[in-house]
Image 1 (tube, helix red, strand yellow):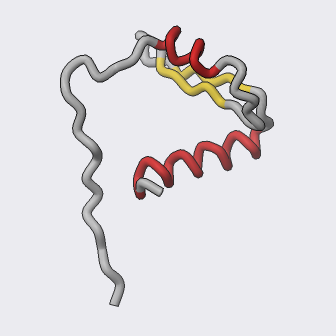
Image 2 (cartoon, rainbow, N blue to C red):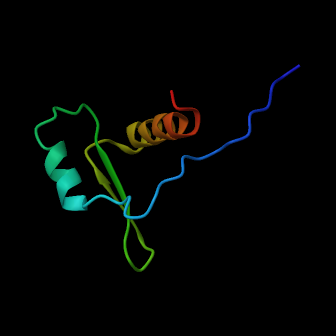
Image 3 (cartoon, helix red, strand yellow):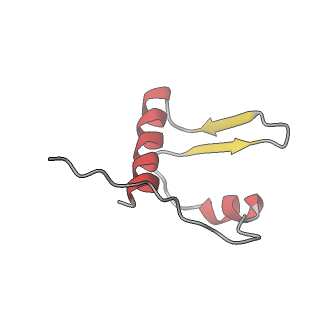
Length: 72
């Protein structure tokens, strides 16, 4: 029989958001093999940029999703 685990996202407190400029500055010089920047603008529009092609971007996003959901 398969075990079903309830998804429980990590709760964060107030002021949990980080300054985007600080995040981008910290990323400089890291020698990434693939890089994708995914953001939402104040008007709700999605903003995506990066140095990977579409297939590499999708793989990277799926790997990130798996890490977020399963913590692996």
